[in-house]
Image (cartoon, rainbow, N blue to C red; front, side, top):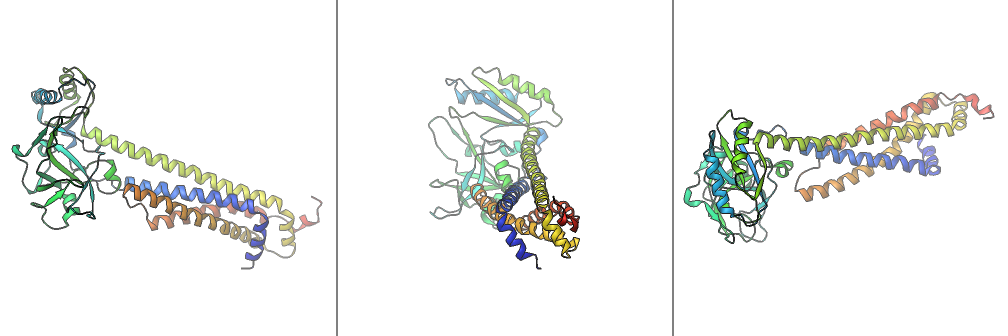
Length: 405
């Protein structure tokens, strides 16, 4: 096409005009790619089954503010009181709660310097833990009472055995039988034997975000550490209501020196996780939409301003025989050339940010198909934005050249 030469010459005279569009397009594309790919990563496992009977499991979050409180005695008293409540079936102390587990542990299958690590959520529960969660035994056996370790202040005895989820077993050993194998829950830690594999259940937002929603390890351990608040997981009979939650709260408030941060069914915990996930996604999408509108209006406004400044040049071209479609084509090609530079810059910036984010979160965020689709969409929006002022330019009459204004 003959337009490229004149366009390049014209752009050299209008560097500020081109730079504004390039900057707008680059920023919009960068934000949109990051927002949509992060939203995709956040929501892609939205409909995964939780693996839990969450309507019949209660989570309790006590917070102790009295330092002199005997933690071991308090936990033992709590367990005894709650067991006596009608409708309660089983209870276990818990370091983390499903759907809200945030603390991650690196698991290794060999004790070497360059051993590969596998991130997981470790749940310290007592002998009732697996039953409280209602998990199915897939391989091996359950914990025995004698295998549960109770650590009081200053003690650091580690259990010799653990159970792992199906997804954790697959990540560590693929299709091999994991029962009887040893793993390491951290560097320089003693080996622990896998005695059983249980059905998958959802851990928390951090692993869910990276597609590892079901990676977990259950360790038979209860710790009484001052300054670390003990949580409880309670299995209740089906059909229980908020009345039972109030009764549990009342029993726990009989102990002075603490307050109860929350008593809720796990269905509420799960909803809170989804609410947070959905809110973040909506905010990112809203920001992208606003930027898209601003960019479209900006391109349209800048080209309209340019057309107003170039009426005589356009009229001259029309007088020399240029057709209306040639005028429109000129401005669309010019816009595409400028936008193309902005799109290239936006793709490069988004890839840099995505690589940094993926490295920090240990996740796979880059999706080539999505990046190409978003880039083409922004290019199409820029064409549509440029079309109206280009059509106005095509309506300029050749006679305008002979006018004084």
